[in-house]
Image 1 (cartoon, rainbow over the protein chains, first blue to last red):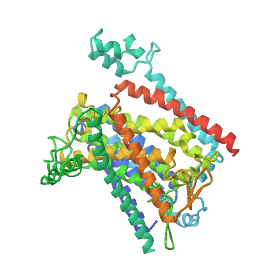
Image 2: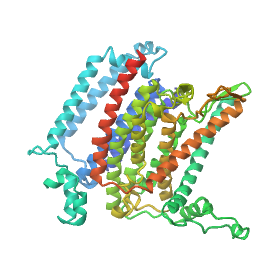
Image 3: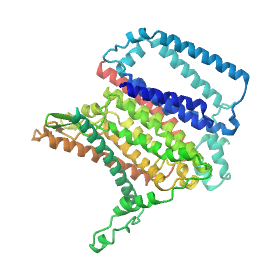
Image 4: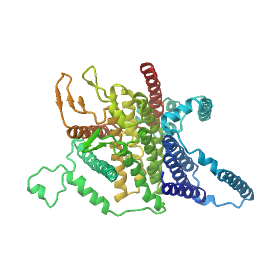
Length: 199
Length: 370
């Protein structure tokens, strides 16, 4: 990647990240966050990790940030309600976080000569085959444990979403049925759902 | 070096012009086609100074769609509602159109074209993870729709935006599963390589097209693709009878035209994907790099230029056929109810895709011996 392109993308990533924390409107923050993640995906591609870059965009920008948008809409937060708070505890926590980050950056940059030594890459670096080979051999256990965690969270989400009676009752069919009076001509046709009949 | 850059630039310009041109053609086809289906006459009035009428030419409504409508739309008042987020309101249509247009960069329009000493690959951008690229750009496409609805400061638009993002996220999963099954079948993510694999014949006459290997994925991709492009029967984000016009209720003039173009570009995109994955891409039955080799044993050898041209035309003909097929479905089926939409996506297509993927992987491992 040409240094100029890298500098541009890096600057954009920093600006977008600043936008996440400095903007008042939560939707603008999410948009900045999505921009930052896309930008980092492009940086990955430029550094040779094409597969990881695209996966980053598919997973984070295409799915997770859209869910963030959803949550913000469903919580219905007004921008005015999010005035900056002069809470001393938050400022203290922020100062600690900044100090840790500064220390980390210092350690990283002071070991710069060592970083330069590892810049030779194998010829198939970043290809989907090499990523998959690593994922399913060297890091197989970690990979499987992660998928187990995800499965557990899916099961947990379903368990929370189910009602105590055991029957799944999504909100949509119930409200949809409420529009038409019972016994209306349209209602009998539309009541294909078992949930609707119980409601 | 300069020549290579020039070739790349020409390929990029060709694909953009073709996509925008075909998008307009689809608009025309939709207007006249829907009229045909509904036993109406459709657009037939616009003319340039009455020249067509004086010469007695039949009016197919071309001028309506290609000239009159764009002029009308782009000279209309660009209305922004009170309390709207002006910047995002302006940005949203382009955020919707841009990811769709750039996806065509990996459309394999043909095999190798030889001019002089240059071998030109007729894919605008040869990317070896093209299938991932397609998934990524389709994933980004949600933002334009979602933000357009939100920035309008209108309840209808907001509801449309929420519906659109829920629908697109849900059907992206089905679409991803269909594409993964295809990738497992071909063993590559490169769309151009997929087309090459589909060359040749089975039993001496049957083209080796992907539809014969992955019929389930084809149906899934078609359904999920139509849901992604928010067409009837999946047009709940617009839902004219419920939400006025859904996420673009507060859009007028040029911005609304851009949203409309996005819809039709997505129709084309789905057609491109279906053609590439299941119908051989640029493959013409029995056409090889040196010409036709018919099943009976007859040969018809042709120069590379004609072969490349035939492949190029074949690809776009297939794309147009599948685009027209989607428009035909649009004017045939009624709209789904929202719970039906979600049930079809999550309880129909996703389990079907998972089963299809497991079966595909099993067959590939057993048959391929890898």
